[in-house]
Structure formats: C-alpha cells, structure tokens
Amino acid sequence: MSKSVSKRDRKEKFKFRVEFPDYTVDQVETATDNTYMLPDVGEEATINYNGEEVTINVQNLIDIRKLGFGNYGSVMLAEVQNHRDIKMAVKRLGLMPSTNNLADYTATTDLKTIRAVGSCNFPHVIRFYAGLIDKKESQVVICMEACDTSMEKFYTTMHKIKETKHIDILLKRMINHIVDALQFLKSKGILHRDVKPSNILIKQNPVIFKICDFGISGQLTNSVAHTMMKGTQVYLAPERIDASQAPEGYGIRSDMWALGLSTLEIATGQHPFAKMNALGIMSAIMTWVPEPPSNLSSELQKLVICLLRIKQAERPATYDDIQISPAMKSLPTEITSGETEMVKNVIANIPDIPDDY
Ligand SMILES: Nc1ncnc2c1ncn2[C@@H]1O[C@H](COP(=O)(O)OP(=O)(O)OP(=O)(O)O)[C@@H](O)[C@H]1O
Ligand SMILES: [Mg+2]
Figure 1 (spheres, helix red, strand yellow):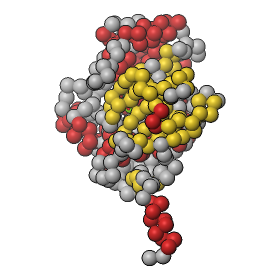
Figure 2: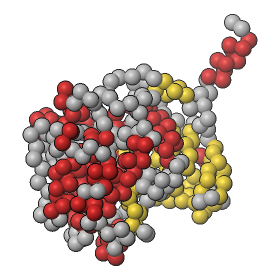
Figure 3: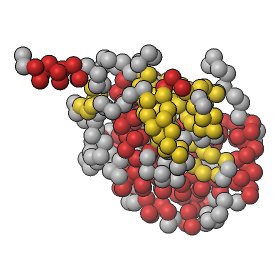
Figure 4: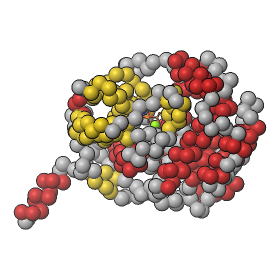
C-alpha cells in the first residue's frame, strides 16, 4: 500500500461519514444512498452572535433549563461559559456509527440542512449558530437561536387557560410568517417536510413565528412506516400516504397540507386524527372534510379548508397565492396589542419541564 493512501486512511478515521438524501428534488420519496462527509464539524466553533465573534466549545455549554424533548433527544436552553449574555437552544442528537440507526441519520441531516439555510438571517427561519460534535457523549450538538416556546406547548396552555380571544388574528399571523419561511426555503431548493406545531416556534417580544427542523428530517421522522412505528400523530398529506395519487410527487403543497393541519390542531386543541389508529387515519385521510371551528373568521376557515384539500392540485399553487388570500389581506401589518397580550399571558402560564423529564 502506498504511503499517501495510508495517510488518507488515517484522516478518514476522524471524519464522520453520514448518509444524506438529496432534499432539493421535488419527487416521490425513494430510498437513496447518497453519502456526505462532515469533516469540518468538531468540538469547537467560532460563531457570530449578534455581530460578535465568539469561539464556543462543546465543554463550555452550561445548561440553564430544558426547552423540550423530541424523539431523538432533548433541547436545552444553554449559555456559554465566560459569555453569560449568550443564550442559545442546544439540541443533542445521538450519533451512532450504525447506518441502521434512524437517530444517526436524523442527527446528521438536520445539521447539514440547518447549516445551509439557518445562517442566512431570515427572520422566520430559526438562526443556526454552530454544529458541534460531543465525542464523549457520541452526539451531534446543534446550537441555534432560542425561542420562548413551540406552538405545541403554546396551544396546550392556551386552551387550558382559555386564552383564545385573539386566536383568529394570531393564527393568521402564524400562517403569514411560516408561509414566508417556507417560501424562503423553497427559494433555496428545500422542502420542509416536517411542518407541525412542535416545529413552529414563537417569540413574544415582539411576537414572531419561526420554523425549525427544516429539510429532510421529515423523510424519516414523518414517513408512513416510521410514523406507524411510533404511533404518533400524522401530518402526511394524502399524496404522501398514497403516492399513486400524485405522480408529480412531494412538493410545496404537501407542506401546505401540514400547515393547514397544524393550524386546525392549534385552533381546536387537538390533532384532528388524535383518536384514530394508523390504519383508520390512512383511510380517513382520503375522504376527510375538515371542519374548522366557528371561532375562526370565515376567511381563515376558507384558507384552512383550501390548504387541506385532498387533491393537491386543488390546494394553492404557490405560496404567493396564500399571501394574497382574503385571510392574509385581513391581517393588520403591525402586531396588535391583543396578540401581544395573549402571547405574553399564555407563555407566562406554560409549566416548566422538570429537569428529570
Ligand atoms: N430553538 C428552540 N427554542 C425553543 N424551544 C425549542 C427550540 N427547539 C426545540 N425546542 C423545543 O424542544 C422540543 C423538542 O424539539 P425536537 O425538535 O427535538 O422534537 P419535536 O419537534 O417535538 O419532535 P421530533 O422528535 O419528531 O422532531 C420542541 O417541541 C420545542 O418545544
Ligand atoms: Mg422539532
């Protein structure tokens, strides 16, 4: 064996080989074996935090409190040692050497995608600071902008304390901001594929909605097989359940479906298929006629119904079509004091997550 080859082999040992499907192609999902390298991910990174360059190390992240817990690990609010003013959300994902491990794929694809667009400073896309590797814990560590909470937690408390007076305008605001984000992602060749209340984050001052976990994670976490395995709620559009319905494949209209479903879930306080099993959902989804609650304005009800049309060709053709719909036209440009008060009150009532949860 030549000297140069063995040198390269040694170098290879310190790179993480990851499997990463191409997420820019608008087509029916198929298994893919594209592989990518993340040679530049290490224990340390220099980040730009509000214009200031700061070097962070995985050992210097100090947990403040738990922000949430997903299928692949926890998300903590953390600060940086010696830079106590820097607060960020730190998501840890298991990095397993086995290519058969779903968490392994998600960890790496999440990082690659968030890095590609999260650094663009787009207001409705969660800002990405750095991706690190914690070798001791065998984890990918994603450092991102921290929001106050997710819409999943928000709506649970909102219904519990019955703080729904300004729900119509708040949901219109959410759709306006998230459609803006999805349009931006699309301009970068990315479909979200995992739109759901837990991936829509909210900040209260000023009220703003941001999308997170964009990219390919949906290909795995929201696939029919995996969702049935997990037995959790489904945000898959009908054409993703029965691909023969849509020879043109997965496109922005499947993300529109998931946004419509999320809006309905937030408005009613429960996922429309919450009480069904996977098989029930799969048949119901093909004939379903959604009924938005009467406390939503007629223009928002119409928009939600339009986003949830079973045939994707009957959903809006473009994101612009949504932005110029009567529901969006009725939305005041400036955030109203009603929205601000409502958001503040709901967030103040969200219970803390115990550290041992
Ligand atoms: N940047 C962030 N700022 C504030 N809270 C966050 C942030 N990122 C995630 N969270 C919280 O952490 C929770 C867990 O997020 P995570 O993405 O790991 O899982 P999930 O979206 O709930 O489900 P899944 O595992 O299917 O992706 C979210 O529901 C949210 O409440
Ligand atoms: Mg998420």
